[in-house]
Image (cartoon, rainbow, N blue to C red; front, side, top):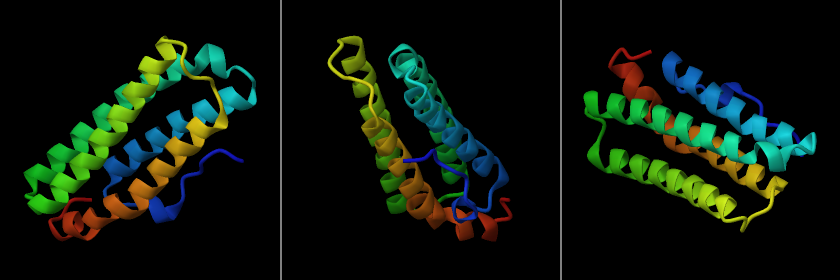
Length: 137
């Protein structure tokens, strides 16, 4: 398994969102590197808290932009549900970690990597043309 790389297929055509997506990739990769350096147990909580905070910041920004430009309601609601699910999953993982109910392994990294890749390639790509048609780059 290797860390996540930023690929051009993730480019949603809005530079600020691309920048924030790169930030999500960076935080996700911090988890990978901690595991590979066998420092996962000591760093997991801090990395998950950073991910929780950064994801909330990014999701708020993205959802606000979608609302401001009147993104179709059904697509917006679906998008928000995906964001809310990840936020809940990360919060649950943090809670289980605090209760010492989970161990550090590559499964968590794979889950976060897969979610991020799938969300950027599929759900986020739905708004690329929408924003660009409204002059949002």
